[in-house]
Structure formats: C-alpha cells, structure tokens
Image 1 (cartoon, rainbow, N blue to C red):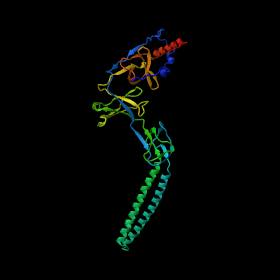
Image 2: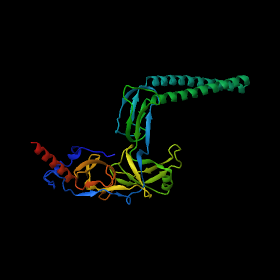
Image 3: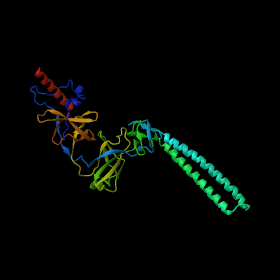
Image 4: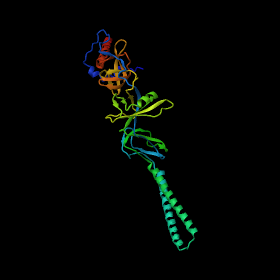
Length: 359
C-alpha cells in the first residue's frame, strides 16, 4: 500500500534551503527537468530478514502482594529508579494491626514457654531425688515442648504479619527505568493487581519468530545483524535459537543480544534481524541524499504519471555507506528525484505560477 503525504507536511524542513535555488521549470507548465533515478530491487545486497521486537533482558512486572488503597505513586513512566526505592505506598492499617497482634501473641507464647521450661527443670531436679514420678516428668516435658512449639509458631506468625506490612511499600527490585504504570493514587488494589513495570536499560535483546526451516540454518550462525528503527545496523553480541517450535504456529523463537549503544532502542521497539542466509527478498536501495527526514518520518519525491514530483512516505531499513534500504513506500521501477530540495522548489514555483494565473 502506498502512503502519500501532502507536500506541506515535510516541506518545512526544506523551504529555507529551497528559497533562492532555481530549477528548470518550463514556463508553459510542463514537468520540470529533475535529476532522477529509477528504483531497482537488488537481491545482491539482500539477506534473509525477520521482524523482531526489542526486549529488556532484565524486566520485572510489579504487582500488589497485599490488599489496600494506594496512598502514593512516586514515579511515572520513563523515570529512573534505584534498587530499593519506594515506588508505590499502600495503606497499612490492617497490616500494622495484624503485626501488633502477632507481636503480643509472641510475647505471651515466650512467657508460657519460659514458665514451662522452668517448671520442667524444677521437677527434673526432684526426679533425681525420686520425689516425683516418671509419669509427671513425661507430662511436664510434653507441656514444655508444646509451649516451645507455640512460641515458634507465634514467631512465624509475627514474621508473616511483618512481611504483609512491608508489602505496603512496593520497592524497585533493581536499578532501572519505569516502563509502564497501571495504578493511580486512591485506587483499591488486591493481591496480584498490576502496579508497575521496570526494566534495566543496560542489557537489551531482539526477539523474533522464524520458520522452522530458517531456524535450522540459523543454529549454525553465531550472530546476526540487527537493523534498528532509525536505520542503524549493529552486530548482535550473541544469538540464541529456541530448541523447539511453537506447535500452533510452527515458528521458532530467536533472540539476538544487542551490544551497548550510545542511544539504545527501547523495549517494544520494532527492529529487523538480518542474516547472511541466501534466499532473501530483493530490496530497493536509494541514496541517503534523496530522503526527506522530519523526526522519525522519512519520505522521498516520486515522479507521477505526468512526471511531477509527489512526496511519498517510506519505511527505511539498513544503511550501507551513502545508500539506505527502502522497506516500503517505493516500488521497483518508480522514478525518484535525487535532490528533494529541487523537487520541492519545482512544486513551489508551480503553485506560485498557478496562483498568479488566477489573479
């Protein structure tokens, strides 16, 4: 499908450059004489490639481990966090009450265990003088053991209650960046409710699903090229091919670890994995100078049936020297203007001339 952009959408990038530059626009309104090239699909530069998604190697979805109402959310999407930072605070009235009750029960159990031990010790001393029966000693020993077990159970109950109180403060498990936030102050949450997602930006990978036939060949490869959304092409530091295919899709998962980059992609970004395996589809390559770039949008001027340039949005891929791969938007045989400034100037002069004719 071809995507068209009105010339003014990207023209702001080129207007200043175009002003003052003349083009060979005939006075009779016929098509201008622009320097052009014919787009041709080239299989020689094309390897096998697959769509992939960037993932964080270390990523954690944080959920509530106790119930309560959200008192505060201290971070938002994109915020950096350090390990141990309190990210979300929940009400702790019930949890603190439970901890206080468990603490009081432990104190009572400790006192009972201490008394049972002291009683047993006294009677054991009397037993050595044969002043009490063995049956009494056995009964006191059982009472002591039961009191000690009750004390240990109270200690475990206090630890559990204290842990529930600690759960009211959701902390960052490691240093990273907040990727997602699904909770707001004032909301009531139950155990298991999703709160935040955090990832460590230092280690990233790209994951793709490939056909079983490609997976068998990829297992012999040690790495692949990863083409980022901005056109950068990097070598993966490691390649992992899953041992089994998904029975429903008959596809095999592939992970390519990304090296450390100055401006790394973010989890969820779309990238492409490129290998040297034969059989890749032919792709179109154009000079980088033919592209109009505004933010993340790329476009080229393609001549229409009347040989007038029209701005067409494209999706770019790899960069090799001064050439850039066009993944979508330009087709084999399309005529592309080499100089987008001249193409824009021709359109500007045409519009000015058309306006003058109506005056």
